[in-house]
Length: 312
Image (tube, rainbow, N blue to C red):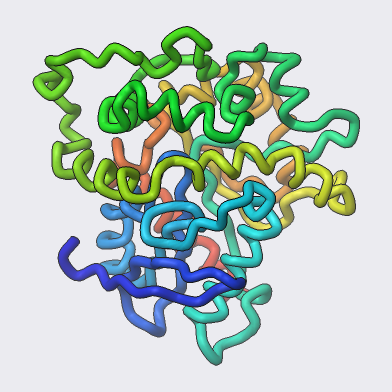
């Protein structure tokens, strides 16, 4: 997109692609994507936040887009990801203060923080609650989901994921999980106003090049992450946090999630939770569906944080 700079950065043993815009001296806002996504999900926020004086930085995480994709799922734990991001911030801020002194707040979209359960591994826990066909459980076997996506047509799968409106936990039945009989009229189905054919084309071009294995490997590394993070059992998020979700988000509408978010459990695990925002008529990709609202909430959060720091 016009005005957004792109470059490759060496971080933590891999080469990472980043998109950035904004004054070099501006407060860095690091924008992170999920699955199956890219830096591109933040295209609206990069432009808007940079116009407000922030330095917006959005990477393709390892395994995605133009960044390197290590082969083994064991290289996709949260420790690898944190290592990548710390090295990225060191590169971005240059000779400024140490990165760990610069993390002042966290805006979380869609998926609320859940503490580590020392009694059960994540995949086992998901299977017990949602069954074998829960999407995270179905993603565990290397190559399996990739083959199913290929059979269903990656373009159609991406289109359905981004624009779908199914509520509740994502379930992928073993029989035809992604719809393996493509509708010949799929291209004629109207896309929503917030997601254009050009947007879909960009995603398809990147995933056709890289495949989906890198993104899926994060799910395959969940149990390994659980093992490696045992020393942080009971840890709470201590920095100020703002949480946003759409009222039609598949995570938010999963049984038990609303009760956790609004019933005190979330605030207990995130003691510096500042605000929970539920945006109407928005699904899982709320930052794309409601870009102006999301940008305004991000700016409001960091403006208040900066005002608080100045008051000390």
